[in-house]
Length: 274
Image 1 (tube, one colour):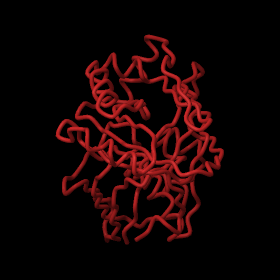
Image 2 (cartoon, rainbow, N blue to C red):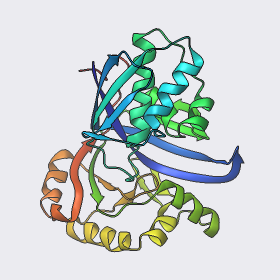
Image 3 (tube, rainbow, N blue to C red):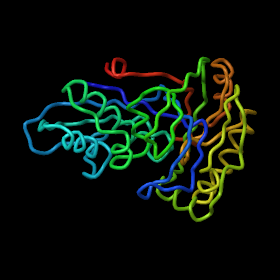
Image 4 (cartoon, rainbow, N blue to C red):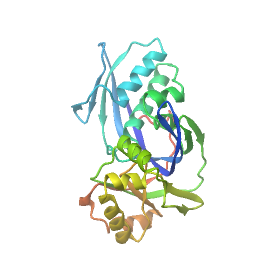
């Protein structure tokens, strides 16, 4: 079977000082977007999963292997799989690719094999704090350690021009820098009554100062304000489809991993499969 594993954009992100088992509590309005990886799942007669990303075997301790192991811990389930993932969501970009892969697998396999899903708290602590959001699959206000998901109705079309630089920002390093600097967001904007901000901006530009030049370039080229998603390095702006299509023509795509117009979506167990 094949499933789609969608990315996300953090429209805003606040990181709180309070820790739960070493994980920061957060507050974030997150939307799924129509940029996705493709996951092919095959049953195998083996006692070990085979996980391949873009035709390359990857280390065992990844979000996909963690999600499969957690499903088995929660259920009397001994089936193993060959998982082939075609990556379209860039890694270490703040778009949640690895978490999305895990969430899509948890959702689909629990449905197909009638398995109990782990609690959001277990998922957040044992796999990643973004994963519960991807199990939910709809715009949501996410709090706690990522384990509290409050669906949020955004009843207007939300189109964004997404630019993913070649520069990367490790989430782990971003949290370390944020803890060290104790900084909060200094860039706050509003789009259709949604507050747009990100506490990771200052930590991310400390780790990768070139992000400042990239943001300046995007804004001077398009005349639009750009914002950071997640811990970086992806940036996005808002607009109508027609307007964004005109803006994208002013960006030198060779300077980026991806320059693409994306939109807010809702997805469910019924819509992630081909």
